[in-house]
Image (cartoon, helix red, strand yellow):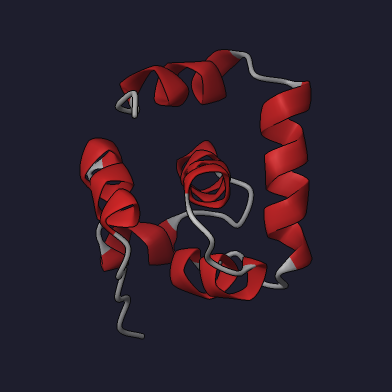
Length: 89
């Protein structure tokens, strides 16, 4: 599966998280390394849920909505650490 991130904000997010196609494929669908970029992409871009889900290998697109909710509900631990790495717009 070839992953192509078109929006600049998506490229920036992946660069911050040092993610590659092989990294994404090896992570579980609920890994913080997937849910924080999913949250970031949906907060800062107009890309669809399906697009984010396909690009990050999260399965059904509803997982993106669940991931966003989780980041808002429980922002502790690894999620908080990953959010700190994100650039301020």
